[in-house]
Amino acid sequence: MDEQDLIEKLHRIERLYAGATTPGEKNAAAHAYERIKERLKEMEGTEKPVEFKFTMADMWSRRLFVALMRRYGINPYRYKRQRYTTVMAKVPPSFVDETLWPEFQKLNDQLRSYLDSVTERVVSEAIFKDSSDAEVVEGEPKSLPS
Image 1 (cartoon, rainbow, N blue to C red):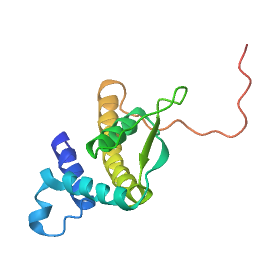
Image 2: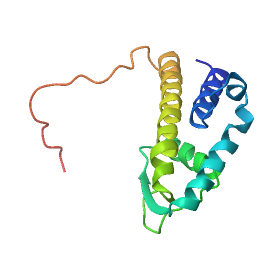
Image 3: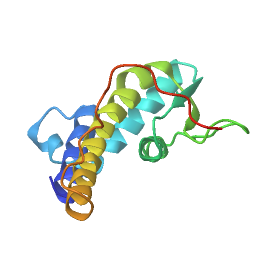
Image 4: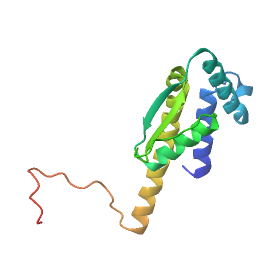
């Protein structure tokens, strides 16, 4: 997969969560996020936003999630002394359950897959062809010298 393929896959995922049902709507990637923002405003009118704490596994996931939230007009933040990978936001629970989190997970899966393949290719070409996992051995690790 090249970078352009990844971008197109991300657009398709967004159109899916925007509720694009007709072929014309599916081709309107530029308007998909507007439909999602409208849905969020409707939910805010009927459901009180709740503070959520999201914990990301790595900085790439965090960047993606923060960008997705900002795209929909959600203000991401974190409190002092919270980890860098923690993201807080006040959002209607149904929007998180039905749109934000599922969309993020699909986008993140695609991004991680792309980053994994690029990393594997670069490491095998530049460092060493075999970059498979380390061997698992029986027993307990010996104490390291102090």
